[in-house]
Amino acid sequence: MSHVFPRHTKIIPPVAVKGEGIYIFDSNGNKYLDGSGGAAVSCLGHSDPDVIAAIKKQVDQLAFAHTGFLSSEPAESLADRLIAHAPEGIERVYFVSGGSEAVESALKLARQYMIETGQPQRTRFISRRQSYHGNTLGALGTGGNEWRREPFAPVMVSASHISPCYEYRLRRDDETQEDYGLRAANELEAELLRQGPENVIGFIAEPVVGATAGAVPAVPGYFKRIREICDQYGILLILDEVMCGMGRTGTLFACEQDGISPDMITIAKGLGAGYQPIGAMLCSGKIYKAIENGSGFFQHGHTYVGHPTACAAADAVVKKLTDGGLAARSAQMGEKLMTALTDAFGQHPQIGDIRGRGMFRGLEIVEDRETKAPFAPEKGIAAKLKKHAFANGLICYPMGGTIDGRQGDHVMLAPPFIITDDQIDELVAKLSKSIAEVI
Ligand code: PMP
Image 1: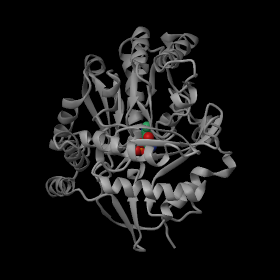
Image 2: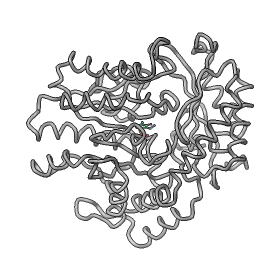
Image 3: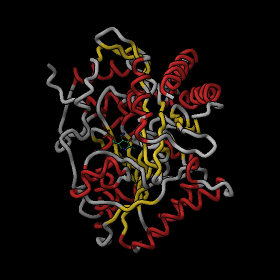
Image 4: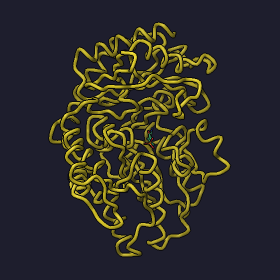
């Protein structure tokens, strides 16, 4: 009997024993193509020799040092590397152990910034419906995913929510992309005015929405207008790139493609690429200086902040993404993946939308392509697809979700950037077979 607390107590997973390139093997000898990089984590595949060597070297030299006393060479090097490639104005990096911690750090630093700049009445956050920003109480309270929030709502501080930027579902037929982007972004202004903008700390959103919607990028112009509104009312813009950052969408930071600089960015998953648990919160020089000139102390912290071995692994990862050209490869192979998906599913009567950027792609599954009507939730299409794909040797990320009151199913694909042309074909063939078995 296993003593591990599994994700679902009624679904005991097989035991993974080996990783090689884009494949994972279990103890029964089964081989799985990791078509979603777990949950958009394994951007370099499972056996990258450079990252493994960097970890070994660091463990031999110094596995851990507490940042209450000491910084470390890997943390310094990784911070330099990230800032060298970060959007304009972003100047400091705060390392944590994962995505939820990164978001918690951003929320707390944003609040502290307001206190230290003489605006203590600012206490609220705004995010978007259907969003997910992590599972710890602060991050969960900020997110807008009803199913995840519901049981914990009585014990958490809640944000208010505006509509997501979701072209497939929410753009009206008589609107251009630009008009829709403006309308969606202007909901932030309306919500600010409703709450009193002087009471709001910040707005948090994913540039390309991952787990809750299946790789949905904002339409062009949306984030430019969001940036304008944040500036006009003095609120902070926090971009959650935990899933879509680190080359996943074809550029190191996803927001590069929206042409804006946020005040804070959170990253995780692809940063450690699965080799070490690590996340980070990056902030602007303006925010850092407010703390430096004020209390001089960020009132936050975890034992494993700036963990040297985790930073050494991530430093090797980011080096490969940037100098090694793998973020660019994500853009290039992502186009090939999109073409292969369009060839396979472009005419499929139950695939309503194929979308995404770089190596971050999503399919939306509908009962009726004309009306976009989703399948009834009781059919459990996403759950069935996950099961069938797994049995067919494919790890992908299907989810059911509530889109402004309607239930939809989608499948998210986020394979390692090292995937080859033949492996893209293998992925799409396995997915086609699985979809045919389920729908
Ligand atoms: N933000 C986003 C956008 C995410 O996708 C996730 C994880 N799915 C998180 C935050 C939380 O990250 P973690 O699971 O590493 O705590």
